[in-house]
Length: 441
Image (cartoon, rainbow, N blue to C red; front, side, top):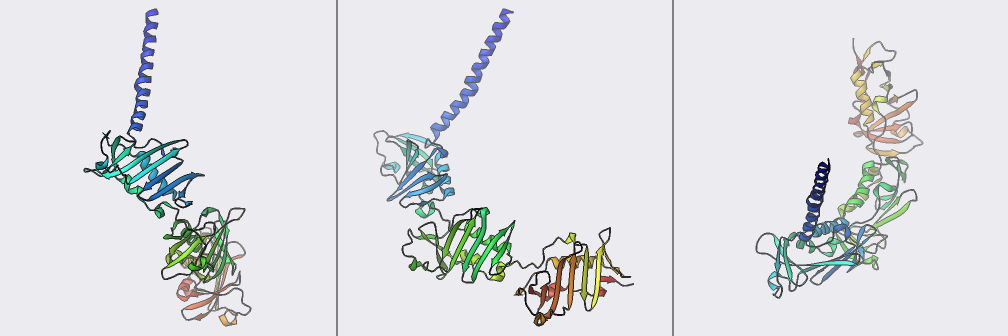
């Protein structure tokens, strides 16, 4: 029994040794090996500031509130994705080969006067690396640490370190939280507009009150959120007049969150294919192309929702149509088929369904009047046709059709009083006759 216990203790001790030395020890040795292979010691997340010296250029970057900022040679925001990408490459760069050059000339390696020097800080600690000449084999360069050691590492790091100041800096025309925007105020050569968010949709509140074209509103926000400026023209805005920004052609104001915090950017009228701009919160003046301005250079018609109706086609339970002096009424039966009301003829179910779909997709070709006092000029005092769609007892849709003008017809939304024109060809499945809606015996 005693011998068995001793053997058991020995086995446990051997097992513990194997676990600590072989498994945990190997893991620790691997970490040490990987750290020794790295060109620069810190991890990307540990770096709080860093600098590049390249020829006569010196760029310094400092991390502030989770974002990178350039402090030399100018004070401005940096492009986080560009900086983080470079630091990821820097901190993951490996030593391919080590050459000891103690007492030897570093000129053959391009390190006597290195083209690039990178210095990183992690609190009170710092580390540096020099990037020199290309090697004679592979896509590699020589890199130096201290006075005596030269390494071979990938040449991609040096290429990425040779970016210009503009490459490194923030290229956004305006900083804002797109999902937090609740109100937009736009002044443009085409007019002055105001948009307010209503649930997941947007509505126009100036110069008219109406639903806004969701695609047009999203195009404005996406342009400001994703598009970059072409260049920085001036680091300060002391001379706005030279850039036509003393009286800008475009002003876009965004109000975000419940407290309606404001962000604003202004643009000049185009000069050829370019225009100048300035974020109200930053001193720099930048340049954009005229494509940048397209989402903001729209007419009132372009900003309005063109769909005349908004309903679910499956929810409609009753349809009435007055056309050519003939009144027709249809309702859904228990099998969801359309039947005529008070008619002896069988309704064409597919025709009624198509009518409802055509009404659902009907779009304005132009907006004529909001609530005109007289309907005579539009042929709407005594409409040529009327369509009503019901969900319950009250009509969900009531459209009145007036006279034809060219290839368009005047239409009045009787529920809000608005008069528009629609393309006559879009009414082919709506203004149906008795013979089209019923099967003959």
